[in-house]
Length: 395
Image (cartoon, rainbow, N blue to C red; front, side, top):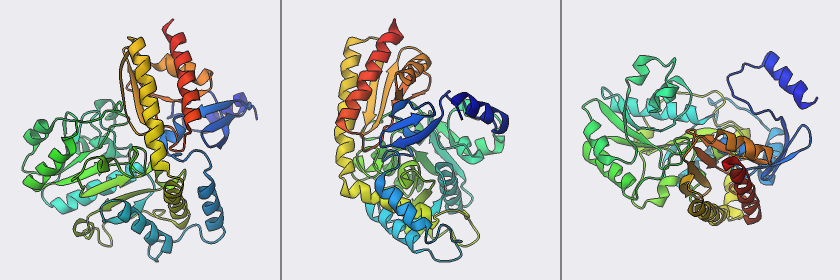
């Protein structure tokens, strides 16, 4: 089918809850994708960060093919070897906790909220940050401190959270009330505009939680599994360990999987009957995730993230010095934002027209979340296309 035919089919049979761009992607390899007309694009925002090793990474593809021929799904009332090995892998890459597996970032956030509230008992409310983003389910979106997302959300859910400014420890301390059980925060905000906190922010929150007897929940759905140049974003800050951590996106190397990790003394509160996910931790997703960790380890992906991400930040900072329309450049690893002094929607379209796929968030922040395997040459190609599109955008 042609692009027009496929779009027409979508419009007839698929609910229109997404603002879709008028291209149909049919194939991908590494950092490139091709549309139904055969045109190639450099994808520097692959799957909202899900395709963190690029499209169709070889080890993940091989692992999925092999596992699909053995066992794709098994109910969680039986043991699943790959789930245990994956939990061990995550635990050793982080803080030695125990894992619960689900299917998405929003589900992971829901599980983290439930566990924190079980732990809190009569203390039920959670402090979250302005410009945060935690998912689209009812409770996760209520935790997201952006009013534009709250339409249709139950008032009782919103009342479960207290919103304060990001990177403001004094505001958090002032917001702590007798019924608060936890603080939930992204180590670096992604959808909120690629916001990087001050170096003492997370350590101060950790100290505050210890002092006031609260849990620290770190939402690493965007920043986890290598995107920042370390396995998890909090690891950039010595001395900080979360009580509960969420992850998804990059975790499956392209397949749907989410998880929480919690300290054992907290994790033990999720007893049979308290929480579940039918598809969570299925063998197929676990095989993909284990292959993802293997690729990160064997191919020295974290080193590449730091090198390529550093190049992108420096390149955009050079543009900023020449172009007043760029207000700021922020980034860590391959999570990079270029903030403009105007709406960037047309710039996004120009980039797509020239063969570059990125994202515009908060109307003015051009967001780059390329594959962690992006090469220096591909990074240069993407920056060149962006610069040409930007020059045209300003005319």
